[in-house]
Amino acid sequence: MTEEAKLPLHEIFYCSTLAQGLPPGTVGLIASRARAYNALHGITGLLVFDGLRFCQHLEGPPDAIGTLMQRIGKDPRHVGVRVLHEAPLAVRRYSGFGMGLAECEGPDLMAGVHALHGEKALRHFLALLPSFDING
Image 1 (cartoon, rainbow, N blue to C red):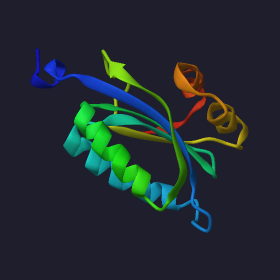
Image 2: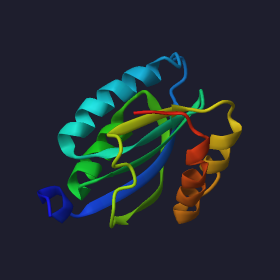
Image 3: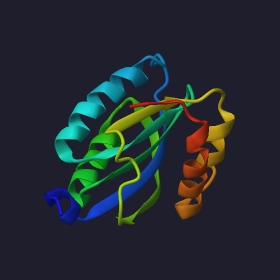
Image 4: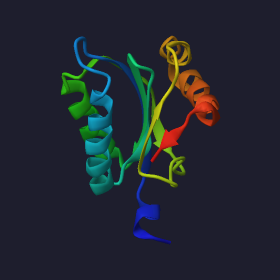
């Protein structure tokens, strides 16, 4: 068993909105910096952006996830950050890549996720995964 496999895992799923006046290209910069930061801290996940809204599912060590969420909450590029689901996690869902980025067409998919809360929101998001073109 690897050292990482012994560490407890935590997951958090949140949604936010791109701050007004920022170009959508800002998302590429967010993702590239997130990949480097998350790799250093054992965090994996997926960020989905629909041109206006973010939905991000993160997994990793509880302390690292907590610190990252504090950073995200203070990031002026995100507004209306809402944690929809948070829980201990037995096994990583995103072991195939560190930090995936998917941009989806039109606002309808993410609007549906934003309207939900708790495990129902996460299940809805996970059900959409096959429809995303994920860049990892």
